[in-house]
Length: 203
Image (cartoon, rainbow, N blue to C red):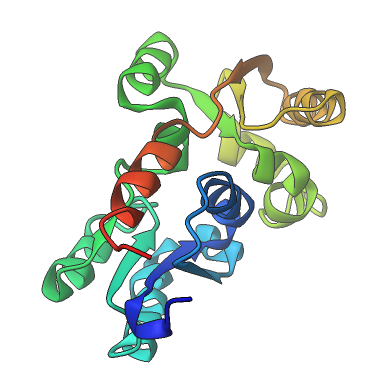
């Protein structure tokens, strides 16, 4: 069994935790450790770079390699500045929706309807807490037009869909007064990127 110094650490967004752990398990990546930051950082992306940097500091000298399980995620390139200074890589793309859908397919979706709000399995499970209550819509429903007045549809990009999740995503679209579309993306570029990166660190 490899010791910590022979291992790869993935510092990940909590919204990707289940999927990253699935990729690790399904590909028998036994030399990979995963540490997750709170998914609520999605609502305050300016805090993501500092939070990641703190975890990088804590991991220094303990792992052969570190990889960051975030896309840019609304940091406006600030996360990349932190990572480039340390020679650490991250997941591709601007956000997890592009990551799951893959770059080309996401561009097609966006070009077809720029006013699209996206849900993943994680965000569908936690829509009421992270979106509805997180944006204050449970207390001030009139804010719906402020936040979503320029949106026209909701696309649920599913990873491992169930009848329940599809229905919950449909209900979320109704609450936001958006048309609904379900597209099964699977793990998209998340799986291929993690497998490529993690296999550079032998068990």
